[in-house]
Amino acid sequence: FGVLFHPKSAPKKDKQLFAWLVLATLPTVFIGFLVKDSMDTFRTPEYVATMFLVSAGLFILAERFPKRKRSKIKSKTAFFAAFFQIFALLPGISRSGTVMAGSMLSGTDREESTRFSFLLGLPVIAGAFLLSSLTIYQEGLPDSLTHTSLFIGFISSALSGYFMARFLLRFFKKHTLNSFAIYLILISIGIFITL
Image (cartoon, rainbow, N blue to C red; front, side):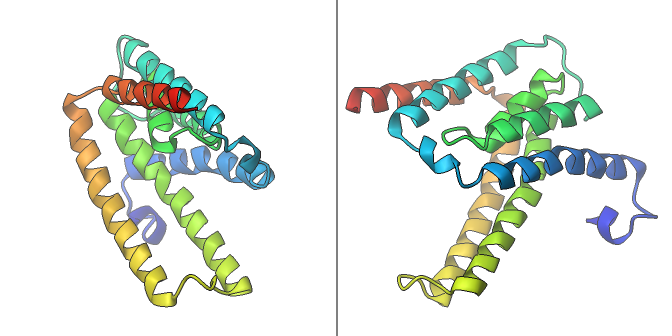
């Protein structure tokens, strides 16, 4: 926030990080706007289960390659994060997990990739909130919703998201993405068996 409100006095590393975040966000905004109306066609159980397996494979690869990873965000990290964030527009693909895995594949270590992934989620969440607010302003609330329930939902989502982000930042200091890969594989198998 210091870069936005006090750009002249902000540390150089914060300015650079802000630039990487902008670089990784803009392509997603552009592509997301173009394809937002066509994503519903992919929302089938079979497709989502398949994407769970794709995500699991990506997580396993991210832990294995490259062998040596740096603890600093580079331009390469931003380009990889941008690509995988666009990929995460597909239903069944976790945005935060995929961006994290993409950042790791670029050579950034797990802890820094986790931090960058959550920071990169802020403009995406803010953009979605603004679009939803605009829709509500133009069309009004659905009959099943009230302003009070909407406010409670917003606050509870913000708080749960904040505490989950803190938990995962601590979790990935000691644990790998492999546990989430196993979880996705099991869920995917369960969906296919059910179908």
